[in-house]
Length: 161
Image 1 (cartoon, one colour):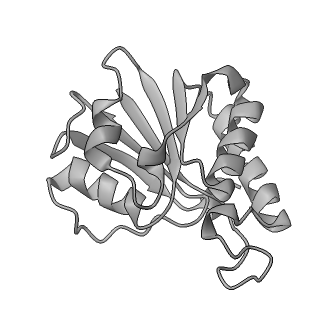
Image 2 (tube, one colour):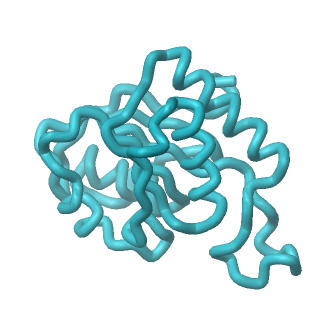
């Protein structure tokens, strides 16, 4: 399986009084524009997905919806609490069906870096810097919680825009 991991785009500040609930913080206008640019680059690279799975939090949801729209795969977009910041990584991985060839996960830090670290090393503590709007590609032979992946790339959004 080719497992792509996308961090949500630039979002409203945590201390913004308009969003007392962190789950509701949306992408900023700049975040929307950059996410659109990243999604267009992904399309230009010929990427498509059997499944786009996103955290249900507003900023990740918007990132996933923009990406799915640009790639023409809105019907393959689903949401999982297991991609929320306090989500269960083991349950997330168990839910990925082995017949899927390309999957895109959209979520948050430090959750995503910990997930990448676990899949690459079997530990949660590799120093990984996944920028907002950054994209990672892993090749996974058999999805499981532990070392099972090879890193193909990890790029910041400025290289995709």
